[in-house]
Structure formats: structure tokens, C-alpha cells
Amino acid sequence: MNPPRMDQPFVIGAIETDIGRVPQVSSSLGWADHWGTIKARSGLNRMHYAVDPGLYALGNPDAGSLALVTANYKLSFDSLRSALPGRDAWILVLDTEGINVWCAAGKGTFSTAELVARIKSSKINQIVSHRKIILPQLGAPGIAAHIVKKLAGFTVHYGPIRTKDLAEYLDRGMAATPVMRLKTFTLSERAVLIPIELVQALKAALVVALVALVISGFGGQGTYVDNVVTYGIFFTIALLGGVFAGAVLTPLLLPYIPGRAFALKGLVLGLITAVVLVFFRNPDMTQWANRLEILAWLLLVPAVAAYLAMNFTGASTYTSLSGVKKEMQWALPLEITAGTAGCLLWLGSRFII
Image (cartoon, rainbow, N blue to C red; front, top):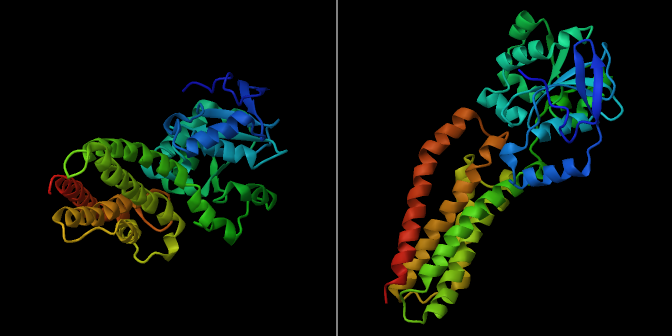
């Protein structure tokens, strides 16, 4: 395993140790770090926002300084170092393939094997005089502490869930309060997830909308342009309504929507959105074309909302891995069927006089 590169933008220098130079980082984040955070949370360059795994020095640590572990997803790395202003520590970064701690623990990359291997390859045992290592609590599912002790000689301590509590945790002699062990999912914590899901959904939605705009001009009794204005633009509005219901309203209103399954919560908001759209559409229901179009919206909009709502299961405290798998088994086929049927009905409505 190669040591971290010294030329990474956030590396400010190097610390000389018995095993050689260790990259030095600061607890202060620069404009490039903040801009990278904005892009990652918006889904831009998200899968490549990583740091080199290995050992880093925060501030000016010595042999007695504590060692903390994190993932090589840069948001995780930045969250850890920025939570410890004015403190000196060693940061051991695991290779989680650019995935955050919680998800990596579930996927098996924030693992016992990786931690043991990284402890040995970094030679941190030759740098520190103690044998204690602090891990984030959300990484616990992937780590067998007794095996780490047996194979690497380090005793694992689990820090608080939130990095903002880390300084207090250390000041308390590595003792966590009950609040530090509680995983919340507040409005602000839910809202911060919206941009990445919304951007990804809009990429696909805009392509579909563009195709629909082209197709909408054909059929019907009006001119091509009139049909695009009447049917194509409304298709775009309805599609974006489904995206908004699933990717924005669902996470914001999550605790207040009936049902436990995320697909069901998205379905509820999708149906409400579809009904509102139909109300403002106010079609002449004596015509079969309009009947098919309305039925299309009652199927398509809830299907889109339900599908996008399911994307939040992996970031929620409401679900378990087994629960997510069960939900996908029954929800995904229904969403695909309803969405396909809605598209076909809309196409049919365009060519019925």
C-alpha cells in the first residue's frame, strides 16, 4: 500500500517521523474544500471526490497524540479534521473507494481487514507510544474490534456519531454521552440530501421531457406548435412535479407522511401532486383523449415520486438493509409498471381524436 501523496491540494506540509515524512493537514478548510463540498452534495464529481488512503498528521502530533480513523471520501475526511481546530492528532484514512463511513461499513469497504492492513502499512505503531485508535460509531458494523486487537494490537474506541461532538468526547476522556450515541434525522439533515438526488433526477427527467416535447406536436387537431404548447409543456410540468414530490417534498415531510415504506410515502405525495395537476388541467372529460391523458398522469407522476423517494432509504435511520431489500422487491416492479403504463397512455392520448 502506497503512502498518501504530498501534492494533494489540502496537504500543507509534512511531519518528520521515525518512518519518514507524513503529510500534514490543517483543521481549516479552504475555498477549494468548500467548493468541492458544494459540487459533491450536488452530485457533481461525487464518485471521484476522494483522498489518498493512509496516514496524515493533523496539526503537529507527537508520539502521545491520539489516532483517529475515517473513510477516504473527502467529505468524511474534511468533516473530521475541521471538527478539531487547534488540536493535534494522527488521522488514518481507510480505502473505502470514495464512500462515506456509514455506507462503506454496510458495503464492506470500511472493514476489519482494511483497518488492520492500513494500521500495518502505515506503521503507525512505530509512531505512537499508545495502542488506542478511535473510530466513528457509524463504522462499527464493519469492524470487529477484538480481531483488530488480536491482529494489529490496537484497542478500538468508538467516538460519537457526529464529528461536531468529537472535541467534547475527547475532553471527556473518550467518554460519550447518551446524546452522542443517538443518530438523528432532523429536517436539516434530511434537507442536505436533496441536492444530489434532485440533480441526478433532473438529468434524466429533462431528457425524457425533451423527447416528449418533440412527440407531443404530433397527433391531435391543432398545429404542431400548438400541440407542443398544450401537451408537451404540460408533460414537462407534470414530470417535474413528480420529481419535486419524490426528491424534495418526501425527505422534507418524511416524519409526517403516513406509511413506513419510502415508496409508499412517495406514492402518497405523488398522488396528491397528480390530483392538483389534473385539477388545474381541467380537461373536457367527454373526450377519450383527455381521459387517457388524465389516467396517464395518475399513474406516471406517483410512479416517479415513489421511485425517487426510495433513493433516500440508504441515508435514513428509518430503514434496515433487509427492509430496503424487501421494499424494493415489491415496489420497484409496481413503479416500473405504472410508469410504463402512464407513458403509453399519454402516447395513446396524442393520437386519439
